[in-house]
Image 1 (cartoon, helix red, strand yellow):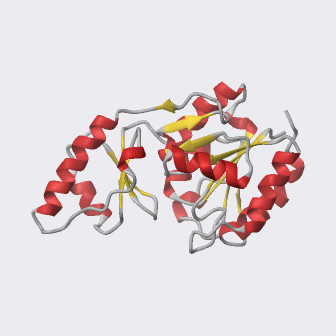
Image 2: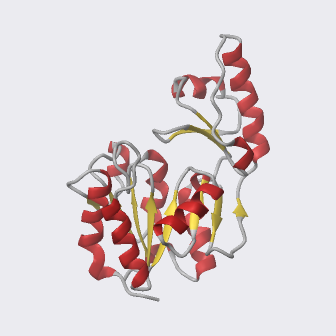
Length: 232
């Protein structure tokens, strides 16, 4: 039996324009009303995730910054994983490289990030990886931003730590996602599910692939596994 849902945001409960699918929101609220813990996971900042939890109607538990930050409930302590100083040094190298070419990176909310750093996909991610090949940092393209992360930090390691604090096991979770940054959490969850628009590598690690895309695929997955849930 499943005791919790862990879901990605962009590309999973949204449409192709990043608008929340209202049916997906209703599906989440139905689970919450039944006493099922729902955890939101994203590359976004913790302050964004806090607001999103309130607006969607979850219990406030989230994974932010692709696993670099997590929190249990609205009043829980904010846990920060990894070393952002490594990311800052790597970012300076990338910025210097592109400034010499007359380009300026567009940073995403650097003031509100505690673990990773992110910038717009206005430069080739493969080129960024080459620039940083000798630096101890992971370069992650989520499809919405390019992230610099400490090695060993991802949504999967965050799931393990989060589950322990919640008194659960990773196997107690149904995890739903679509992107490369979701692979670790999908592989470590009890059941991993993805939507039709997912990256091929992401589809390779899951138990079920929805026939529908984006938020409609999320709804399809929830309908398929709704009978597997048991309130704690």
